[in-house]
Length: 449
Ligand code: GLU
Image (cartoon, rainbow, N blue to C red; front, side, top):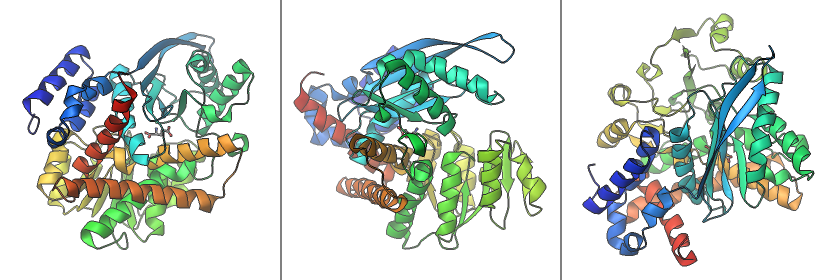
């Protein structure tokens, strides 16, 4: 509880107490609260108005049964969630995660982070998140469809384009969004394209949404390199963990900007290719064939596959963790620091443990939290909502330019806020303070909500 003063510390303790066992949620709350002592000195009204306590309590949390029939005609039962966390800035907005580790603590950590991330985008979107402990891995297309239809059969009554607009996250891509949109449309008998984002292009999707989180991460990181180190991606050795949607398009953009990505991973292990990852192969394996990374080394002799190893042991200049929460622990952070890594920007949500974040900051490694650096996905979702509302379709270049300017704006808000609080280059403080103040300052004039 290093930097928390006693008032914030008491608030944190009460949040932990009323949300027992939800360790990832506690961690996400702590990350924000740890940065707030200096803010509360300048804004005593935040304490008087109990802003922290109000923001930390979700406006609504929905938990529901999702029964579905598998291919062997056996009934399966999963649990569905939607946390409608904060609608201060706009309709709840945030993805759905389908992964066996999903429980209330994961959904609440993601929903809580989403509030501040969405605030930083400046696009008038509140914070929400949802998902299920359903594991899409190894399921047939029909099983995934039946699950998605059952999931939406309950979720539909809680969402619409003015209330709550879900999208994808881990385990939820265009295929799942398609099945859910089809079921929503069928139930409500309205073509409300703006109820979900991340849709296919033929039914209201936006160009660049697929690439957005990865591209946005790289636009943000490029600005971090330029502003703090007077350099660029040109010739930099990079590691992008993960091999999902975020990782693939971060790799694409890094390569375009002249950087070299030498490793990426899946949940079983990682591939290391000093000549640089071949993106065409990676895309085909992951997006078309839906196979594991082991297939990559069968085609590329320069690459090694290391089962169960630690990807962060490979020396690099820039690390972009884009797999999942808590994937960089203190031990990995110390190895990255020892190997001369200069910049860590998060593509995933909360991929760095608190002690690892602390180690980076102490060692002067520039660190940017996901709520700033990975906001490009949700920002482009808001662009998709804008197109749906106006029944318009933008070109790839137009949407990409919008994304880029939003990411530069997020960067500048974080950078300038850190400077204002005399911690120049501290994106952890800059992002959390800037995001929190936007929500707090909007909430107070709305009265006791
Ligand atoms: N799941 C993504 C995130 O973590 C995107 C959410 C969205 O597009 O609504 O921000």
